[in-house]
Length: 329
Ligand SMILES: C[S@@+](CC[C@H](N)C(=O)[O-])C[C@H]1O[C@@H](n2cnc3c(N)ncnc32)[C@H](O)[C@@H]1O
Ligand code: SF4
Image 1 (tube, rainbow, N blue to C red):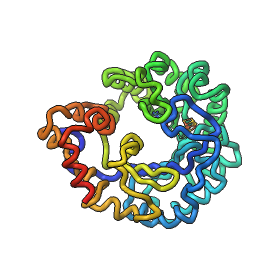
Image 2: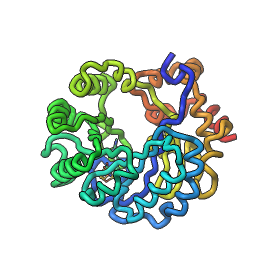
Image 3: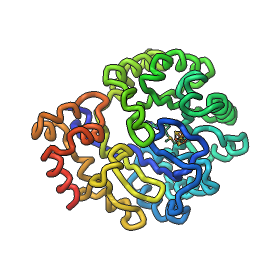
């Protein structure tokens, strides 16, 4: 039995990659953004058409990400659209940012629109700046200060590979000492520009260790968090939306055509999530049953597993063909 098979499996988060543009060029970025947005990005009007479906689906969170979401001049208007559609505020509105565009004025404006802000930082200055760009460490720290000063409790997201692994513990303590309590370990995946880092991807043992050590520092009394962090793949609990509206179960599976669910300009989100379509089928996919059909997929039951990685390794296995056909009814 794994965490998927224990009954209720609600929709956890919808990631809207609102732009493919970025003012930074982190060397491992899965989004491989360019400095300019692509021409057919979803508009504010497109989002306003999507929000009623999102409100009806009631994910725990909507995450605005990119590229750098704050490069969009209409970003606050887009978020306001979700706020208005989600009248009872059932959905947390979250924003992932590199921090470069955070000013005190913007931070104050965001207070009434954004529930959680996550700023990315990968370790001490030398390590962070080598991979995320010169000066990005200081800029991110300044952004965190500005956000804290206006009343946010910003999260720091640390994307970990074998390269920065030795520095994580010391860096987590550094952030705690600065008053940042919300710290999240994110594992580097070999996607987009991250493909160049395949040899530096953490092993499950390393993931376990870095999570344990981080938890020890941030919440030594709360070992119950441990089970929350050590999940198997949560495919079916997430939805990934690209800047031009393409929907996939997650940003790892997005790269496989057979796991793309369609475009929000052509099909309502709610229809994509119905039980007889791909998203619905994935939400109901029972990993234990899947492994019984083909024991070669057993690693999907491991803690920290990723179905996208397993699919990438074993996509030729007949068991997938059956599932994919089922999902494309
Ligand atoms: C793609 S960025 C977009 C938001 C914003 N520009 C930022 O840097 O936070 C969102 C998060 O994904 C992380 N990320 C980028 N490439 C990744 C990869 N190959 N594997 C895992 N996480 C990655 C970033 O470090 C960041 O924390
Ligand atoms: S991780 Fe964020 S800041 Fe870095 S290149 Fe990717 S989108 Fe830009």
